[in-house]
Image (cartoon, rainbow, N blue to C red; front, side, top):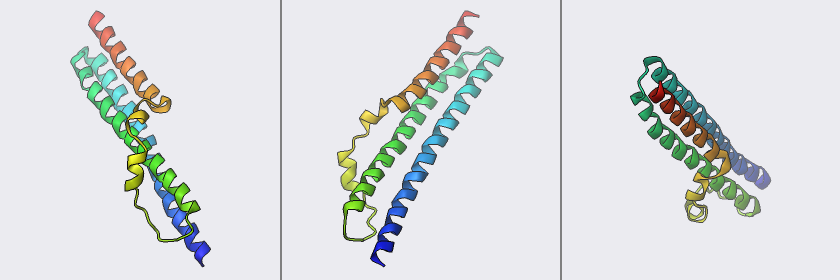
Length: 133
């Protein structure tokens, strides 16, 4: 019985990790969709002012995506701790791990930074194209 409870608790943690990973993927998709829509709208209307909206959108989605990655890393660490823990208490408290895993280094992690850098470059390229035409 105790082994089944342990497995159930680990499944709870794994489900949280899966949801966070799915949210991160959806955030990337929404950001790409919004930015390409803004670029298309500004190119169609020949107004580069529309592109200015894109930069805060990219920054907001970049931070939100990093936040989900940060929480995912925290829950992965929590999962590892719970595997080694012999006591089953269905504890989902991660406050102590939030101090150990830092948010800021994840902002410039290659998997996240590259996507948002490319979107910023596309935005700047569209701006330069509109300004010169």
